[in-house]
Each structure stands twice: as structure tokens, then as C-alpha cells.
Length: 105
Length: 459
Image (cartoon, rainbow over all chains, first blue to last red; front, side):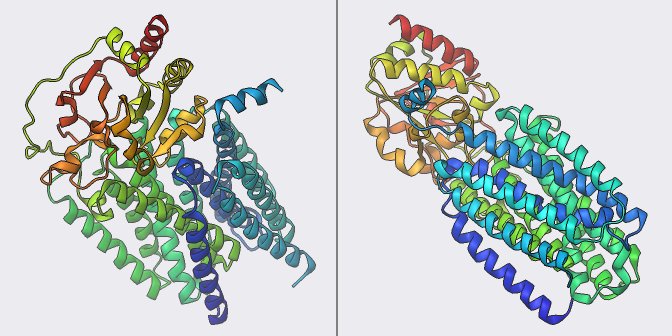
């Protein structure tokens, strides 16, 4: 990693941290559990690093196997995380009467 | 750069932007689902971009991993019950951190010799955070699932032992950082980090799980961000940092809600000793029978339900909603008061009640609901203890002194649903139970609530 790339990466890190703070402090406690499972699914983006390890050229068979395990666990997080977040968010209804009307439609 | 590399980088940029939009959507239940669809789209784009833009030679492992992971993930998404959400989340922290650690080990086995110093430093952080979060989260999941006893596991000199382990890990890190050819130190660091994760979580009691869950969330995210530094990949840095900060913010909120510092949670071993200093309350607990309790509820104007972890263990969320609907049909105003650390993870109670079709507009946060207790006829405490303990407010000597509580003792009357006469997880005596306005209704919360609903119907 040359210094220019490192400095750019640190900028990205610092700005993402600031942005994250701004965005996440607005999430109401009501949604803290879905928030946790959502950020978990999003950080399953380490899947893209795992994919490279599992299949790219210049990597050893050992790295491919490690990559395979990483792809598996990261995919569990992505699929399971998004799936369960959606299942939770679906449950948050407005007032009961409105919910009943919607069912009646 | 070839065209496919540009395509890959473009998908990463799009994914980063969509992730931020997704989290922005989380600020309201109305927009949250739409936001998550954006994030899913971003994730899909990034995966396709990677497969197109990287020179992939062996597809076997990739396809196998994606297939197995999707099957297990989908199975979890569909079948895990809401009451098991804390365990599932802890497991997913472990999976995410393990993926980061394995990518780190893989990069090390291939690129160790040509790695610049800075990258090696990031790699060290990735390995340490990833490994300790993996084992720590597994222990947390075991405690939440009941496979490991929820009581803190402590021994003499524990903090000294942990400090020694931490120092050993740090020494390995420094040696590996300065001497890349000494691979033995790299693997020792990995092993010690696995051990350290176990040691960090075993002394922490179940009641402190909301903080631990948030911290592990934060570590898992930072491990992913460190992976981004190792691979010089910005979308990994952004997504990991968002996750890391989300966990950090939640930890701070949880600590505030218990009036304790993070160090105290991690090293205090709260709940291990039964506090002898707790005020000798004396007095007797007044027991109430179902009919009287039902009568009281049926003729009340305002009722507030205060759920705690006991609601989750008894799976009583549907029963409480049925009782509440029965009361609302009689014209009673029903609200739910949610303490930030009620349950085992942030927002645990909200999700359970939402599952039982309780509209989120009836769920109130601590600061909103506390002024309403004095004008409330009946406060019904369901399996909550420390979060309603008036000692936190009145007794400066109490172990939980200063912890903000739901002030149910200010209500005109209180009904406490409890399994038996035992103490809460912190082992503290709760003076609320001895107050003249309080009545105890013993038994399993679910069956008590169901019977209450039946009794209310017959009033």
C-alpha cells in the first residue's frame, strides 16, 4: 500500500465514521434490533474479499479452502441477515385499526 | 485498468451509496423496509461486480460456498423464532468476524512476503478483532441459548490473567509487524486472540448482554473495515465502519441506560455476588389472585404494560397483546413502556411485541412514558425486575444506583407478574415488590396473562 492510497483510505474511514454517526444516531430505539441485524448483513460485504480468496488466480489451494469457508459464513450473514431484517421490519405495524383495514382490502 | 475493473469499482461505489441510504431509511419504520431493498441491491451489484472484475480461475469453491451459505442463511431467516433473535444475532457476529479473520489468514499465507508495513499492521488488527469476536460471540450465543450458564464465570485474579493474555497478544502483534518472516508469531497471535475472546465474555452475566452484543457488533464491523485496509477496498472500509460505529453507538446507549461505564460492564463481573449492601427492605409481598387482578384491570382507565426478559422466556408476547385488546375493547387506554436494556439485546422487546401485532405507536420509550405513571391506574410488570427497581433512584448505596428506571412505583397500583419469589439477575432485592401499592401475581407469565384475559372477559 503506497502512502497516497493509505491516506485516501483513512479519509474514507473517517468520513464513513462521521456519516455513520449522523445516520445511525437518528435510528429510534424501536428499530435497534433490526438495525443490528441490518448492519450485520451489510458488513457481510466482506463476502467480496472472500470471493477473491476462494477463486482468484495467484492464490494457493489452502487460500481457496479458507476462502470457501469465508464465502460460506459471509453468505450466511448476507442472506440470513437481510432475510431476517425484512421479516422483522414487516412486523412493525401502525395502529391496529389501520392494519385491520389493510387486511380487509 | 481494464473495462471490467472499472465496472467492478462502479458497483462498489453504488453499493456504498445504497448502504448509506438503507441506514438512513432505518430512521422510521415506514421507510426501513424500502431502505433494506436498496442495500440488498447494492450487495448484489457488488458481488456481481467482483465476479466480473476479478480474474477468477476456480469457480468450484465459490459456487459451493455461495450455495451452502444461502441455504443455511435462508433457513435461519425463515425458521429462527423472534424469541431467539439475540442468539441468532450473536451467531451472525461470529460468522462475520470469522469471515474477516479467514480472509486475513488467507492473504497472509499468499502475500505475507510482499506486504508493506502499513498493510501488515491493518492485517494484525483484522486478525485480532476477527478472531476474538468469533469466539466471544460464540460464547455469548451459548449463554443466550442456555448452553452455557448465564451466570458470570469468575475466578481469582481474572483481570490479571486477561491482562497477561492481552499483553501476550500485543507482543505477538508487534513482533509480527516488525518481522514479517516470523510466521510463528502470526499464528500465535491468532490463537491467543481466539482465547482472549472467550476470556472476555465468560465473566459477563446475562443481564449485561445488550452491551456485549453491541460491542461484538462493533468489533465485527471494525474487523471488516480492517479487511478493507488490507485489500485497499473502499466499500469494505465504508460498510465495516458503518457497522462498527452502529455497534459503538448502541454500546454507549446501553451503558447510559444502565448508568455504567463500558469498563465496568466488561471487567466488573456484575451479578456475580449477591449484594449484601442492598437495603433491608422488610415488609411483606402482597399476593393477589387472578379475579382481583382482572377486576382491577377491567375497571382501570389507563394501564401500562412493562415487559422484561421474562416476557421473552415465557413467550408471552401474544398473550399480553390479547389481554391488551380485551382491555381496549372495554375502553381502557393501554400503553407499553420499553426500557432500553429490557431483554437481551437492544430493541429486543419492541421486536417481540411487534411480532405479536402490537402497533408500534403503543410502544413508548422510557423518557416519554415516565411522566405518565402518576396518572396510570395499573402498571403491569411482566418479567422485568432491575429496570423497575426504585432503589436505583432512591438508594445511593445500591449497586444499580443512578440507573434510569421506569418509575412504575409512581402508578396508583402495580401488578407484578413473576415466576416465584426469587431475585432478579443482578441478585438485588427489589423494594418495589414490598410497596403497599404493589401486588404480586405468581406463575408463568404466559398462562397468567391468558387467564387474566379470560377473567377480564367475564367481568
